[in-house]
Length: 95
Length: 489
Image 1: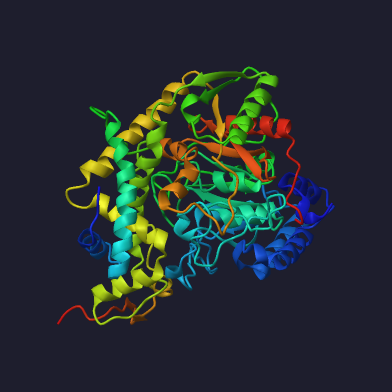
Image 2 (image 1 turned 135 degrees about the vertical axis):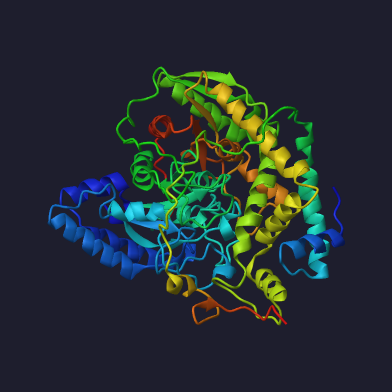
C-alpha cells in the first residue's frame, strides 16, 4: 500500500485534523509503512468466519425505557471552553 | 519497616491491628512523592484529598466501621480514569483543564472499599504507546537503571506512571488500563505485578475510551496477593457499562496459595520466534521448570494465528479510537483553538491538541473505516480476531493456563526508543493476542536481564478465571523470590 499526500489530505479532512504539506509528506510514509505491514492479514483464510462482535459471550442487557440520568446542564457545560445561556457556543454556522 | 515499603496486604494487617494509621501511611507517601518528582510518575498530586480521605478512613475504623477491602490504603490512579473535580488529562493537551463532575465506576468502587487517592499518574497520550514518551506532560521515568549505565529507562506504557509509582514506592498500588498490553508491559519493565482481567470484569464507565472492545482496567502492585486484593475491590457488574459482566466477583485471595499441583500449563510454540532474545528464552524455560517443580504438567500447545494478532490489532484499535476520539472537538471540554468557521475550529483544535502518535492512529482508523475500505480492513481484521479467539478456545479445552514471556526485551533507554512506529508496536507482541480474545493475562516479575533490568512472565487464563491466573502467578512469584528493588527506591 503506498500513500500519497492527496490521500492523507483527504483522510485528515475526514478526521477533522489540520495537516501541513510537510506533515502530509511524513504521514504518507508512516501510514504506508503501517498498512503495508498489516497486509499480511491477507494470508489468513477467513472464508466462512464470522467477524467478532463481542469478545465475551453475553447478551446485551436491556434496561427499562425510562429517564435515569440527565437534567444537569450546569455540570455538562462546566468544562466548555465557551458557553452562554445554558448552551455551547460555536462559531457562526448559519449565514 | 518504612510505610512506603509495605505491601497492601501488610498495610491492611497493620491497620487492622492498630499498629499504623491511614494518616501515617499517606503522610509517608506524600513525602516520597515530593522527593521523587524526577520520576514524573504523577501528572497531578492530590495530597489534600489524600489527607482528608485518610482522616475519614481512620475515623471510620475508630468507630469499628472501616472494613472495606482497601480501607485506609493509599493508591494512585492512572490519569485515564475520570475523578470528580480532579484534573483528568488522559496525558493529552486536548483535555487541558478538564475536571469531570462524575467519577468512574472503578474508582467509585475503590473509594467505597476505603481506598485513599494520592494522585493521578502519567500515561502515554490517550493510552496509545509502550514507552510513556507520548505523554503531553513529559515521560514518566523508570526507577530501574541498567548496571553501569546511568541513562534513564522508560517505565513502559501506557500505564507507565502507575508502574513507576508502584516500583518507586510512591503508592502501595495503582490502577492501570490495558488495551494491548498497557498494564502488563509496564509491569514487566518495572518489576511489578499487573493483571488485565477478562473483558467485562471491570466497568469501563468513566474511563476515557481508547478502543472500547479491547480496553480493560486492572491493578498494578508489588505482589500477586496485592493484585488479588485490589482487583476484587475494582471489579463488579455495572449497569452503566453494557459490556460489564453480571458475574459474581470471587474472593481472589482465598485460593491464592493452593499451588499449581495437578494443573496443566500450555506453552505456545508460536511465541518462540527466531529472533527471541536468549535471555527471554532462558527466563521462559526457567518459568516452565518452576511450575513443573511445583507439580504442574506443561504441554506444548499451538496458537497458529498468533503472528496476525498485532496487524489485526493495528486495524481494530485505531478504527475504534478514531471514532471514540471524535468527541474532542473544542466544544465540550478542554482545548479550543478559535477560528472563523466551525470546521476550521475543529481542525485547528485537533491539530494543536493531539500528539503525533494519536494523530497517526486516528488517521489510520479513519482510513480503514472510510467508504470502500471497511470490508478490506476492519471486517477482515474482526474475522482474523475470531480466528485468534478460536485458537485460545481450543487450547483451553485441555490446559488450565498458558505461560509466555511478557515482553520481548527489558526496558529501553528513554533517549533511544525503537525508531519507527512498527518496531515500537512489536513491544506488545506477547500481550496483544490476549486483548483480542478478551482473556485475563498477568505479568509477574521473574528475574533480571543481563543488564540488571527486571523481566516478567505472562500467565494467560480462561475467561473469568482470574483466580487460576493469580494462583499460577503466585507460584511463579514464590519460586522466583524476586526481592531485588531499584537502587535508591
